[in-house]
Length: 255
Image (tube, rainbow, N blue to C red):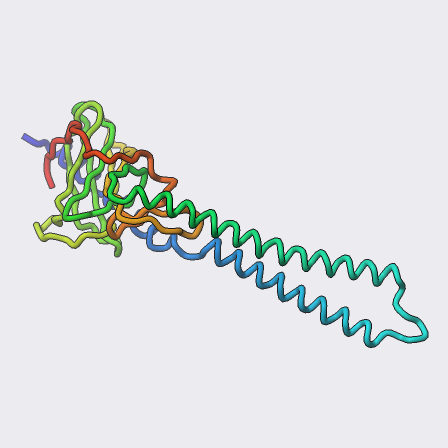
């Protein structure tokens, strides 16, 4: 028999998990604004414009100097040195950009060999592929956990309360929402929360698993595609060509 106290804690746990999942969805949707490559391009463009302006000013200065009091040789030499320095900066930045692009292209070619392999990542993005998604966390025997899943709009579509086992626990989602409707494949946000005997909720670290379907260059890192979900390469913790091995699954208490 479930007591009023346990019901209250369960509701508190679900609320914490749902709030965290919504926050993850909102952070994911707003975090893609801006691009380091765009900033670099803008800076190079500005430097090139300054270079052109400098040349124009120097030419004008030479044309309009006073014949009876021509420009001091030292000053002229100094300005030419500045001119050469600006020209060198523009050329260096341009070549550096090309070098980075070639390096990224080579890395992308190498990373493309990962397509089709299983990957584990530290991320709140849960890739739903072929109506299946899974995550793993380390639990304490008998502890209560709540898992909440939100869509890209920040709407909670699935929540589950479960009793964890000692060691690694794996939760697999079939892509159905709380009403039993089958949702489309894509990127969802997920949270795993637990609650102490005193009623304090806290996040449980977890990893998600998916199949790599593509690799592309992101704003500041190579990115892995898992269906419609995109995860930074730096978040990938393990890659395996084999299927995931059996681990202890959390026992669902309610959903």
